[in-house]
Image (cartoon, rainbow, N blue to C red; front, side, top):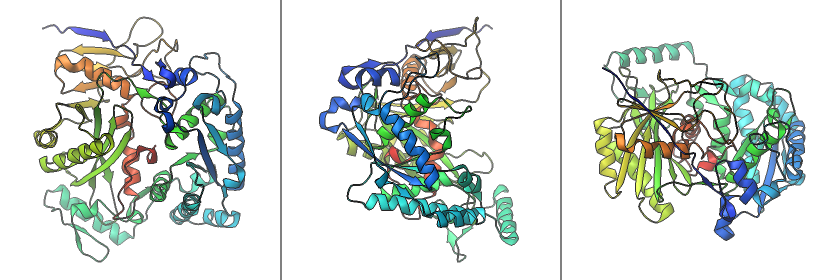
Amino acid sequence: MSLTLDIIHETEPLLQFGDGHDARTPKEGLLAGGPYDLRLGRAHRSALRLALIGPPEAVRGMRSFVRRMQRGISAQKTNISLFPAFPAFQEIFRSSLDSRADSDVILDSSAYRAALGLPPADAFVRMVDLYGSAIEDLARRDLAADVAICCLPRELRDKCAIVDSRLPRGQLRALREQQRIRDSGQDSLFDALGPRGEPLTVEDAADPVPEDLLRRNFRAALKARAMEAKLPIQLVTEHLWDDRRDNEDAATRAWNLAVALYYKAGGIPWRADMRVDEACFVGVSFHHLRTQRSHVVYSSLAQAFSSDGEGFALRGEAVPYDAQTRRPYLSAEKANGLLSTVLDAYRERAGRDPVRIVVHKTTLFTNEEREGIAAALTSVPNVQLVTIRSRHDFRMLRQGTYPPHRGTLCRLADASYLFTVGYQPQHLTYPGPHIPVPLEIVGVEFADVEQVADDLLCLTKMNWNSARSAAGLPITLSFARKVGGIMAELPPGVSPHPSFRYYM
């Protein structure tokens, strides 16, 4: 028996920018036409107000870099198609970067130093409160900032970037016994206990007090605090504002930061030129949640993106962890609920149903999930369920120095593989350190694979947290872990804000 390898080269999708300009890379398009929202008239942001938060030395370093962005930064590498100069912010976005020292919040030095002197778990809580209070202060001002830049020095990150809860020995032993019982298949959904010994449902267990988490991430906690204040934030370190040998060149750092700030301030840097308008792309994932009192629980997440570029994140109902398969899945009822919520959110934003919904997942869809999704989306004419895997053994080499081109689609028997990373002709190089790994596309009719591949290539270009030409994963799946971590840090009863600006 012989197998035939079909190789197709998908065309690099175009991106849409201002003044009717289309381009294949963000930097090229922004330089030529400005941001996409120039096409929307008054929706374009003519000014972007920034405020900085942090200890004095960190704020000084970051303010110096902001001034460089206002003036422009020259190219420092020979491949200017990949590493172009950064013109003044105003020149790129047709929007002024309004950042004044009197808008900054300088953290009290004595309080900051006192927090650093505490044990890691206590320092974590105190630092989140110091920065969180500053964010809330900025949000309450009459002339509020559009984005707050939180400057995080190395000493802070070394102390409390990630902290683990230290449980008393008896409580740790009880948790291990609960885990042993669950692994034996004898557990129920009500074996988790609350602080007063009351039984918790799986839904309760998936909405813990943040302090109850076994592991906490400073970035996620601060993002959650900013979400409550309704002020998007950008976290930065000395790797951004300092010129160091091990850093990216200054112009590239400025490009990435500028795009993120513009998006978080409410702008639309670019839009993908999809084959079908009025489409909605949804990534379904599960956040692994461990707390001090409850068993391991997964919470379903949906990251959805309309074809006009707007992104929103939604939290579905909780599901129990299956110790036997170690793979969570949704019941028909919960799959229906999650996709119904996505559809309602799309209708609220667009005023109509989408023409097409594509659902991405990294595991195969169960029959129950298919049943629930189909029931939720009966009003949508075209629905596709696509499994995307990045872990597999398929590799391909070509003669010469460089790997396969980005956009190479390989079809072998029933399997399809798409190179979302690879050689990029527009940059005359492969901007990666290793042999590229393609994405495996599963569960798609053979005739539709090319459309799915085209969608995926577009969605790898929708990360507005950077000015890179493309990422390896589609935006529907690439931020799943960060989104789940931020939602877990919200206090019980607080609904996550849907706008993706709060998660990037």
